[in-house]
Amino acid sequence: MFSHVTVGSNDLEQAGAFYDAILLPLGLRRRKVTDDGGPKALCWVAPDQILPRFYVYQPFDRHEASAGNGVMVAFRAPNPESVDLAWKAGLASGGRDEGAAGPRPHYGEGYYGAYLRDPDGNKVHIVCRGDLE
Image 1 (tube, one colour):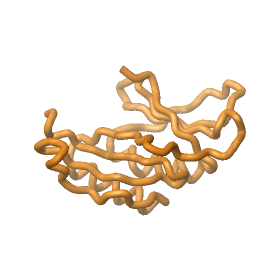
Image 2: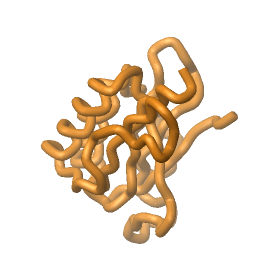
Image 3: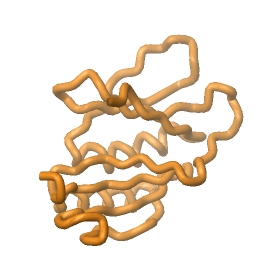
Image 4: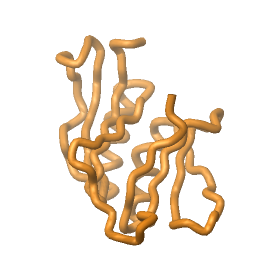
């Protein structure tokens, strides 16, 4: 359904450390971004896929990046242990807690998730969807 999702950052080095910490345990890897004359960017993708991609960009308009109110990016984890690992790694890499890793039965049986804010304030959800397996 999606080609890619993008969030903005004011510090790509810090954002890269944060997203490496939470995305590598989920099986995603960093992909080289070809310089196209636009703003600097980082990218992650599943090893066996071309799309979808997740990008972190310096804003194209060169203004400060800011988090959108009500905007959240959710990353699917293969199991609850990966949610725990990614959440802890995100906190250790400059993220802020928005909801500890744990079961969320009100979202569905087997639903297990965690919520973070990245260093730029973007809301991130890491989820194992046992209700859909």
